[in-house]
Length: 349
Image (cartoon, rainbow, N blue to C red; front, side, top):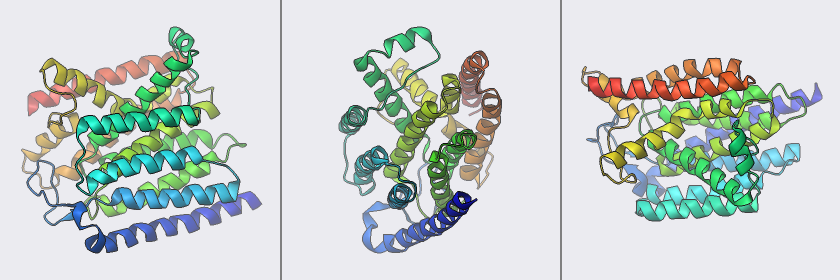
């Protein structure tokens, strides 16, 4: 009972502090972060008619640093890997938010270096995949490093890909971390669910400022940071709850992951650079579908439709998360659903 009271008091104070951080960053953005304002009102997904600062990542990072430090102080758990990775990836993204242009190739190289060094230094690894031959390969340290690195790159870049509509990435991240938190609440000896709950509070506060009409945007710094947290959280929970099938975690991340994979294949087949952005992602096609029907709320509706559909698809995976066979086939079914949805929307638009 005492521990429960401590947790409740801690989360109450933290949620209030998070709101104040976002409000403070928003208030000072017009004075100190003018370079971060999004002035492109004519882009396809634009839902704003006034300049909107891309400082959501800054507020997110400040609130997250407070979460890590306070969590370490209250629960005596060191989370230095979260602190250092989030700082480095935030700086990389924030430089672009402030319009210090870094080429796509250079950015990918820097991101690869950040994650490679972090994986080695903090010994971040994936122990099992649900596939026997791949588990055997993971016993090789070099292969394990490359595999974990690819996972980070896919999740982080996938998060950046789907960011662009109000609430899309934030709500999606909230759903993913919520499922991870629910899994951990069943483990009495784990306090990590409190840390995940703190992340949910931060994301929820951001959503208040971003959805349905945006007062702030995540920016690259925010999407990179959320992607990094999702990847780290998923690996951490997979270690804490080994009874859960690895394919459940694949299902949980399927939209972010497959968005990058499918985009790479799609662009390569058209002989376009996979690193150059286009407007043929699934969320953009759905946006076009609603927008052609003169719906002034196409932007937030797109986010709601995608995340609602995703949430419904994940529920069976969650209910049977310890069933290895079901989890495996459900993951591949989700990929099939994505492809069907994509080509159907492509035909309609």
